Length: 267
Image (cartoon, rainbow, N blue to C red; front, side, top):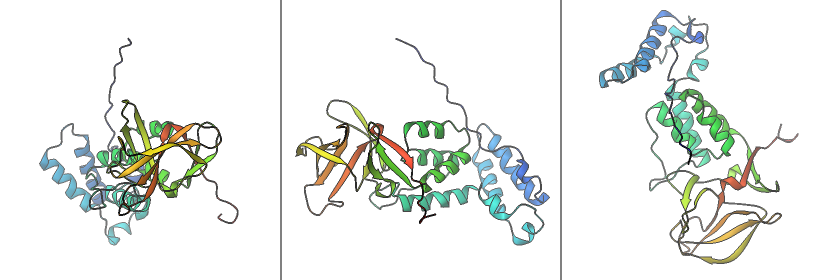
């Protein structure tokens, strides 16, 4: 048996005085310095966190202050937590990233937790997920995650390359988001993506409600119609008052994610 040592490296929250901010007026730069000093503390106290929050509020720059700054306001806002959080909220609404009893999943209030919250809900392949998690700056993670969500992605069979579904059909059947891990009766863990529509899949066997991951739904095994590789399961509602009446759970390892290139009419 091989012994492994895992070391979790700390995130780089903010860098002292980024070059982008060197041209800011002194009144603004001092507020950023305050935030950086708090971010560098190994254990921030409630008082220091409150001070940092106050400084961030002061960074809502007035038009008078911005008029003397050579950096456009929209450029600075790209890196602000409140702006990124608003972007995530919009992405959550458009992409159905989460679902609970109230239909809205509360977002974390700090940038590091928010970046990992988004990472668990990104419908991407293993390679992209590892690249995402290897970034040691939560701001960069958030910006990359938001960019990935805006891409027009299509999902193909990992074995034969036939089209299986599209990003627009991805939705959440769990508070963990559209991509979650489920364990079958044999103890195998399946990372499963839930979608409302699929292509080029065939059912195998009889539907059953036994050990269903989704109460009220019966499941049937799905195979690729071309190569017969196991792609996931079809879930059909037993009662007609359930929403949706039908959806699909696709095995993420059996999918290849590719960005759809716009046609000449779309470009």
